[in-house]
Length: 323
Image 1 (cartoon, helix red, strand yellow):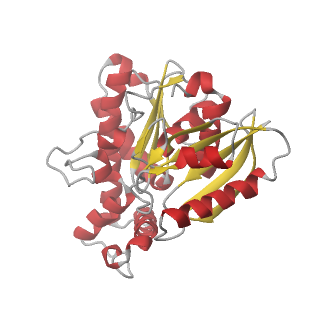
Image 2: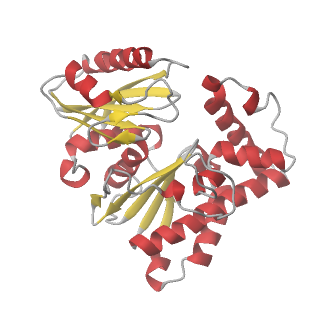
C-alpha cells in the first residue's frame, strides 16, 4: 500500500509514492510552469501525478497534498500567493475526480514540513514542537501533545506573522514588522542592498515576475556565501535574521510550552551564521524556567519533507488529520 504525495510550490512541482513506513519509494519533480494560467498549472500537475501513480507497485490508498496558502481548508480550494495562476482553484476536487474512490487531503506546505519532521525527522520523539520553514517566506506547523494543531481555519503555527519589529518593514500580509518581513530570504537580501551590499547582476526588482522568487533566493544564497567569507554587511544581515527568529521562537515557546523547534528551508542552510545569533536571541528572551529547555535543531529530511508530510495526512491521520 502506498500514498500518492503531492508537493506544490511556486518554483517546482513534486509527486512521490510513500509507503506505510513513511519511506519515499520514488518521486518525480518538474519546474512549475512560469506564469502559467490555471489550466496550464493543472495540466502539469495532473500529468506528473498520473505518471507517478502508474508506477505504484501496491494499492494506492490515498492522496496527500502540501501547498502554499492561503486556502479554504479542509475543502482544498487554493490561492497560493506565489502561483497567481491559481485563485480559488479547487485542487482537492480536481484530484478527487482524477483519482476517484480514495481520500484526498490537503494542508499548508509548511504544515506538511512540520508533520514530516515530527514523524520521521529531527522532531521524532517530541510531543510538543514547532516545525519552521525559512525561505522565500516564513511558515510553520505546530505539534502539541503529539498531534497537529490546526486552529479554526487550518492556520495554527503561522509563526511568520509574529511581530518582531513593531515599526519594522511592511509585510505582504498588510502588517508591519512581521518575522517574515524581516527574515525571509528575499527581504534579507533587499535589506543588505540598502546597507551597501552588492550581489552582482540585475537587481531582483528589475526581473519579470516569473523569475522573481528564484532570483531572490539566489541573492539570499549569495548573501550567505558572502557572510561565510566575512563580508561585514552580509554578516550583519545574518545576525538580523537570526535575532528576529530567536525573538519569535521565545514568544512561541512561552505560549505553547515547546520542547523542540526544527528549522528548514533555504536560509536555514546558512548554518551557524543563522543559528548562533538565533540561539543568543532565544536565550536572552526565553527567561521562564520551563522555556529554557527548548532545543532548536536543523531539519533532517531535506527536500523530501514536503512529500513525506503530505503522505502522513493519510498514513497517520490519528495524529495529523482532523479535517
